[in-house]
Amino acid sequence: MLIEQVVLGVFETNSYILRASAESKDCVVVDTGLDAGPLMNMLAAKRLNPLAILLTHGHADHTKGIDDLRQKYPDILVVMHKDDAPMLTSPVRNMSVLAKDIITHEPADILIKQEGPIEYAGLKLYVLHTPGHTPGGVCFYSEDDHVIFVGDTLFHNGIGRTDLPGGNHDQLIESIKSKLIPLHDKTVVYPGHGPKTSIKEEKQFNPFLA
Image 1 (tube, rainbow, N blue to C red):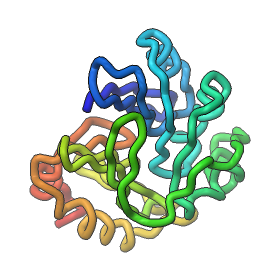
Image 2 (cartoon, helix red, strand yellow):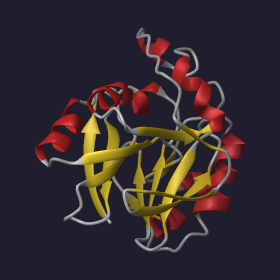
Image 3 (cartoon, helix red, strand yellow):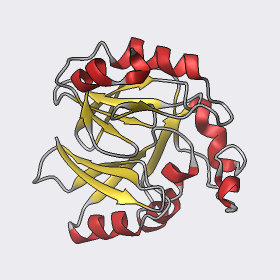
């Protein structure tokens, strides 16, 4: 798997472009940030063909750019968990009202209803449902490549905030401990904000998981 990272918008949201290989032009995008301009520029410069947007959750700082991608790539599929689906159409639920911005989208094309495998652009990923930051937060895991894209579930020596509507601290800790910590130590963790880390690093040093 080839992974390319773009940091987007004032909240410095990490967006990831995933390809099966450097030769492949088909790709998927994990989260789209508030300002998708740099993401769109990278896709165009590399002449990539994004087939799907995989949303880790429904907060606007991870979703706003989907409209830009849908406009340029009309066949692209937006994929998210069913429990966060209402956030796309509600500026209250997606928290854009906090920034005095009204952000809404057309509904997702594909709703994830349960954990399991998905495949787009030749990439085989496994969906882990990790509620706590939001009810429908998910992580996208590749066992073959030992990488996981966790959105705002887990950070380098931190965890996602749980003080927003739908957040639940105990649920988030349980999600991390039951779904993420059991993964192989060398699994590289790609979060929604900040630097990448590893399962080994977080098991040893994350103060929230002591």
